[in-house]
Image 1 (cartoon, helix red, strand yellow):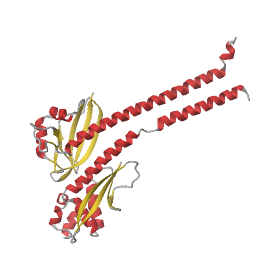
Image 2: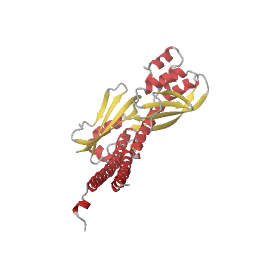
Image 3: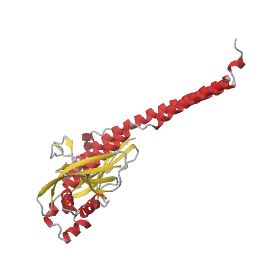
Length: 159
Length: 163
């Protein structure tokens, strides 16, 4: 029969403490790693959505010269330039219909267009990025009225 | 060897192994981060090359280098109907490399804050910085270079973008 002094020695306490500490560190590392991977995957999915939202300004959509009545896919561009008529259609269509065609789900989008000297020349829609999470910004270069413009797409998740 | 020494060494080896495993897990970066960066760079590079190959040179009439070319009568008004990529290529292949490089710089330096390089074949027309990044994206465009005073020729332009 073991007596108490044989089991609960100083070495045993030290070994137990080190074991629990090391196990905690390892478990934390694994948890942290899984969280990082999950966040990266979520970021990847958000990025896909951001690219898709920004592509609106670079594709023609369907039909090629769509109107509010027959639009299937929204694209603001024609002949590699932003088409001002399509911008007007987009405004007349309203943000709600625009967002539903884009299939944005729980996300909202804002487009800001800057001239090369950095002046804001156009924005759509008029929405503030408040009460939101996961805000993503992507800036691309396009042509509008034979001039180079910067198209800034801001995508965010409703909180 | 005393029992406690063996015991302590066992612990140390175990702890060392655990720390190595934990560090390896913590320090390894998911590949997905690089993929996103590459994807965005690739899109931006494609945009830049699209803009250069679709914008007429007359849109940049206010840039210093093009103004000088018109004043010196190196190019004519009709040359301004070429795309800016064609104009840069024409100048580059007609020996006006400095002018071509200056035009590319004046246009590209305002276009993106990222590192960008415009190349043709094995030569760099303009580069905003050195390539030291892990993520480099390349976009290509085939441009027709109408050399000034020469028959039609062709060249391939590449826009490199790094973050």
